[in-house]
Picture 1 (cartoon, rainbow, N blue to C red):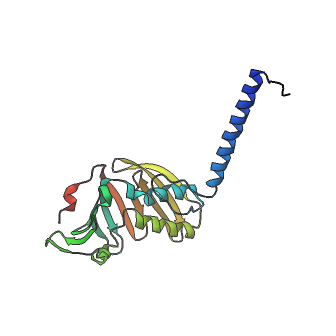
Picture 2: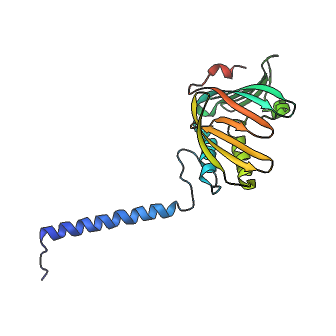
Picture 3: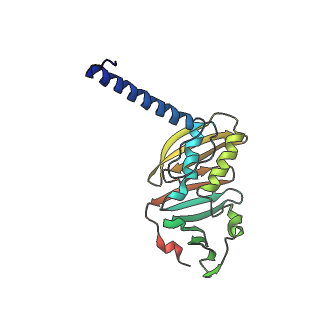
Length: 219
């Protein structure tokens, strides 16, 4: 014969079992993420082992989920060449990157490289058109992510993180000491480049809007 347990005792045991279940699930979830960085709508790459670098990298590598218009000034140190650049990201992966008189367009499967002075286009992305100023159509995020990963491996000291305002927007920065000097990378919350200061290039955000400029897709 089973002796009935008092109601209060059953209630306490139920609470204990519930608490154990919650702790077990929490431990399982924690174990699943050990050694990995969480993702939020994108897929950042492998950790460099330094939070200061990873936080900026995550922004660069997640830029594809954002929509914006960003204007830049650029100094190509070799030759002391000044340039202007504009990046527009719209919905469905549409992008327009204008560097001086050259415009790269990614638009619903269509790719173009256009000369906005002569009003002519070729149906490819021809990165050689802006090689003289050391910029590609990916300069504003993915190229910076690649550079930062290389510098993370080559650094000769501890990186230094900071927060600044550039182009009227808050930005997260990391300064990485490497042989020959220190390189600084800054990224907006959207993932767009805010500042790069290196031995070959200086790029700075001058204006920013969360609204894509559709006129930048005119060809």
